[in-house]
Length: 106
Ligand code: FES
Image (tube, rainbow, N blue to C red; front, top):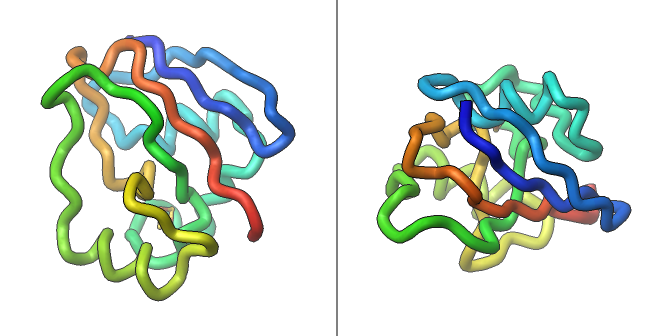
């Protein structure tokens, strides 16, 4: 487990235990993070797991692959430079302390 912080749509700051080796979306859903819906179940198609990455230890985040980038561009509301789909981020120990803000405007 590693600690990951989510700032929910309402502004609540929540620290969750994320399971190493699983997509971050699973841990966010299990923790009941408000605004993480994950309609497609993690297939990088729905963008309802869309968050903004605010902070992360250097080099800890995987690169954005083409499928993730396309879904963010075409399906996500209010995409930004720091947009990520949490279903496409497999949790590693190096991510301890990363901070995500749940994207707004769904
Ligand atoms: S759960 Fe659908 S894009 Fe992440």
